[in-house]
Amino acid sequence: MVTTTRVSNANMMTFSEKISRFSLPLFIPMCIVLAFSIIVLFSAGGGSWQPFAMSQLLKIIFGLIVFFIAAFSNIKTWIKSAYFIYAIALILIIMVTFFGDIGMGAQRWLSIGGINIQPSEFIKIALVLALARYFAWQNSVELSQFKNYIIPLCMMLIPFMLICAQPDLGTGISLALITVGMFYIVGANKKWFLIAGILGILAMPVVWYGAMHDYQRNRIITFINPELDAKGAGYQINQAKIAFGSGGIVGKGYMGGTQSQQSFLPEKHTDFIFTMLGEEFGFIGAFMLLMIYTFIVIMLFWAAKTCRNRFGQLICFGFMLNFFIYYFINISMVLGVLPTVGVPLPLMSFGGSSLISLLFGFGLCQNAHIHKDQQLSSRGF
Image 1 (tube, rainbow, N blue to C red):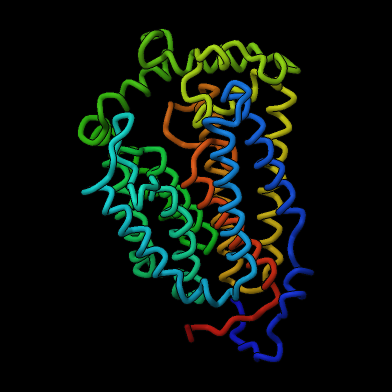
Image 2: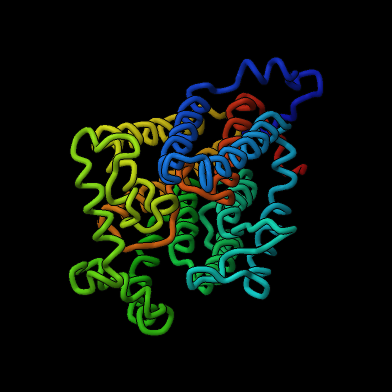
């Protein structure tokens, strides 16, 4: 476990020292994906900055401000405020249940001051932050006792149930996977995962008949046999496969995608933006994006492994899981490997909530990397 030596004020880093520790190998690929997002969204708008590219650019600028604030602030600020941030995100989720705006058959958005936000995107980062705070100073004896996992389970289950009721099964699954991953990282007993898996399998009939909506069941049925309802539930995934496959090796050229430019491809600027990328830039363009994503995950893993304080380690590991789950589910979905769920492609899909929450998460990881050699006092926060 991490030692509990308190750092004196004399050893606190200056701003120039923080700059020198800033991780360019993590920052540069993030910026490349953001730039790629503007390029693809410009094409999605038919070669115009409106309605997608300019709006996304403004959101990126705001998100980068959030990123730099998160990156260069004192790491103790995030330790002290971890539970507060989680509580605010949870309150927003609860507010969605009562006051949320309904769109595309789901109640996921909250209008605040004329700005629509999706709190379910922010709860992912807030949960990672809260779990990192909770587990940071647990010793090996505490981590071996099931009772010490009850509070973290509740941290996940409360927003999980509220989000699934919106309904937003994709985000709910993401929360569960992040929590399971964090439990594994901190060293939870392996038999608990086996028991949870068995209970999950036994609960499937109850979930199928009692908790899922008709359209969600149709998505799974269509996933198994897309031709069963080719013009209905299977239309989106069939068009996605046609668009992506027609791109070939090098693609049809920038703004040359027939499926996307002629509006055969639904949600081309949000959840199915990877398909549009594949149609216009081909296998090469899609593969390059995957390699950048993989490099980002490797850098997040490296940041976690080289961090000497437990809180920073868990922030990096937790966000790495979150980021990987984001793009794994999205890309698997648009390629027909998984059923269709509402999960955006990280840093690429049009939308502010996902983008800003991700940039906040990247900022926290940069903060952990900057303060990687700083030893933190144990329970004095």
